Length: 241
Image 1 (cartoon, rainbow, N blue to C red):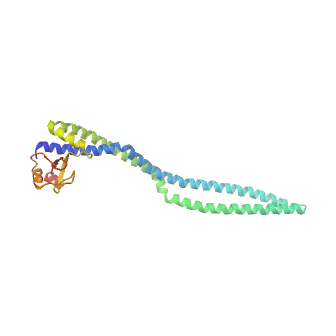
Image 2 (image 1 turned 45 degrees about the horizontal axis):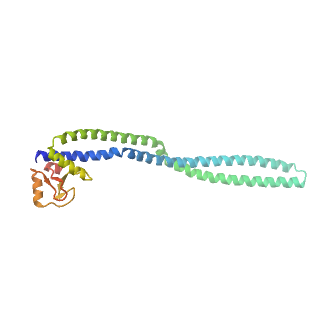
């Protein structure tokens, strides 16, 4: 394979990797936000359950307060009944006793209902106890892993950028111009396309047998008759890999 074609292939592979890394770096903030959002959704669902528990406990406490107040009211009604001196006082005390007893019964029924609901909420929290206990640690680990990956990508991008500049500088001016023109006009940035199963991998057109043979020889620059990209076939050891 001629040296110029080797350089073009290396340049294309480098540019393909640079495009991939640039996409990763350009979307880093978006992907970081997605990780944050994922953990926030978990945390939010846990907070919602905990909020229900706290609301139920507050309702229970309020009902227990009302029960205590009603018992005081009931005791007073009972005293009034015992000390009633006429029919009117007796009837008033009886009504107060009846009202107080009904209130207490109603409050106690509500407390039982709340306790049953609380049992379900506590069970749900218990089932997610491991998640609750490890959520912050998992989030920190995920963010640390993400930041490390971004750092690796940035280092690789800088390294490949330097390599790309050096490789491009060694190309003959005519080839450099052709490569740049083809790379810039294609949306995928492909100027040098591999031939697989007799087809150009950039436009997927089947090449004529003679073109395939010429590409396989690798002793001259051959372009695709359909998309005009420079064609190559990998060396046997590369193809095996």
